[in-house]
Every structure is written in structure tokens, then in C-alpha cells.
Image (cartoon, rainbow, N blue to C red):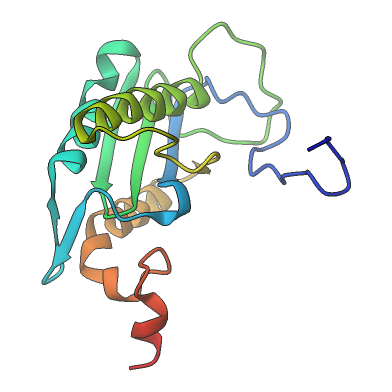
Length: 178
């Protein structure tokens, strides 16, 4: 299919001109391709990881070894997505007011790219499957204040308890009919 800019365009959620390598906290959500439930099940408000989910969690836990200065914060693997806070240390929370300077430092995109690539390789090998594991893009949000950081942490950690009402849950529409 030939590229058509009128049909083939994606709106970026990135802040224009923002340096995603600067110190601060970032909220990230990565969904599986076609929102396939591959990582386990939520039972009574608790996430129970299967082998693929454990691989994903393990890859996430290993990222600070690859990215010095990255500190993982709240993180949860759900049946078909992950939520995480990524913090780059060295300053306070990221504030979007100034223009970001060019930097040779690793960026949020580098961290997410490594996570998606490594976890896809390991999960696909273990499950003897091929093809994309993750949705092509990801959601990110620059965390600007300590109260916002606390609220996002709470949201992430409480995510399994809200699974029945989560729009990422394939049974969400069934739950809406209750």
C-alpha cells in the first residue's frame, strides 16, 4: 500500500520540543497487539501472571541495568497491557515549560523500545509464536507534580482491582451491560 498522508497519519502524544531524556517521571502504558490477553488473569481483583506475564515483568525489572539513571517506580502487568512510571534521576519532576535541549542521554522512547523488543523476543520464543507482541505505539504522560505522581501510583497499583471496569478488558462491554 502506498503512503497517503491524508489516510496514514498518527497523532503524537509527545510534547512538542520536550526533551524526554531529562530527569523526571513519566507515566507509560503499553498495550498488546489487538489487546490480546497474553499475560495472565485477574481473579478477585488480583493479577495472576502466567509465564508470559512473568517474562514481561522480568524484562521490566532488568531495564535499570541497561539504562543507568533510570529508576522504575510503580509497575503492573495486566492481561493485555502494562502500566509503569519511569523516572530518570538527577532532578525533580519534569516540567514542560522550557524547550528541551538536545541530549545524548537515553530517552523515554529508548527505554520503551528496549522493553518492547526484549519482552517480545523472550515471550515469542517461550510461547513458540511469531509476530508482533505489542501495539505499535504507547501512551506516555509527563508527570508534573508530586500529587499527580502519587495519584498515578495509586491508579497503577489499584488497576487489577478495577479490571472489570477497564476499557482494556475485552469483557468491558459485557461489564457495561450489567
